[in-house]
Length: 246
Image 1 (tube, rainbow, N blue to C red):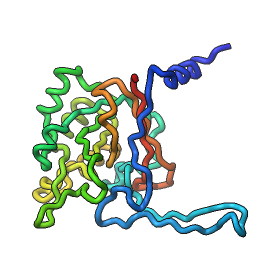
Image 2: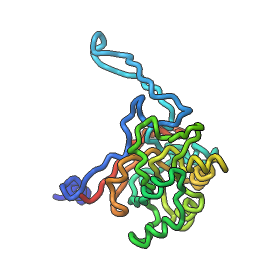
Image 3: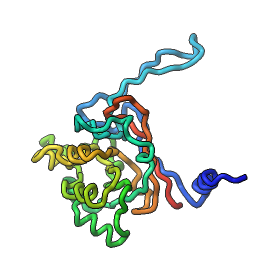
Image 4: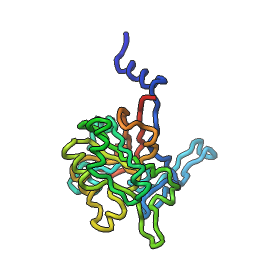
C-alpha cells in the first residue's frame, strides 16, 4: 500500500528540492528592536546534581525572526492561537528590492515594483505569502537600524499603496520582510507605522526579520511559518523555512 502524502514528502526530501532556513538562531546576539531587552537564559537544573538540564528563557514576544498576529497592533485582531494551520504553509513569492534598497536605504517598495515583478513572473496569486527581499540580513546584528551621525535610523520598508495592492487586489494571506519593521524608518518619522497598522488591521499576519531570501526563487517555493501555540499570544519568535526546487 502506498500513501499519497508520504510519496509527496519523499519527493520533497529528494535532491530535486532544497530546504532553506529563513530564521535567525535565537540568542542574546539575535537582531531585535532596540527598545527590547536581549534574550536572558538562566540554568535552573543541571546534570550534576539534578540528573537533567533545564533552562529558563526570558524573551520579549517580538524577538529575532518573529510573527506579528493582527492583535499586535489591532486590539480587535486575531491572537496568535487563532491563526489557522492552513495559513502557516503557503506558496511564496519573493520580490527582489536589493538594488533599490542598496542605493537608497530609505526606499519603500511601490506598486510599480510589484507590477514590474509580475511582468516577468506572472500575477501574484491569491492566498500566497509575499516577501520583500533586501538582503538586510547580510548586515551585522548591531547595524540593522543603520543609524546616521545624528542617530536617525535608515532602513527600507513597504509603501502603504503597495500593501493595499497586495492585500486588497491580490488577496495575499501573509507578508514578510528582512527588516524589523513594515514601514521604512524614514517614513515612520513622517507618519508613524501606518503600514504595519494597516496590515494587521486587515486580519493577516506578517513575519519580520526573515533572512536567506536570496536563496529562493521569485516564485515557486513553499514557506512554512511555525511558532508556539500561545493562548491569546500577541506574537512570538518564529521558525520559518522554505522548500524550493534545487
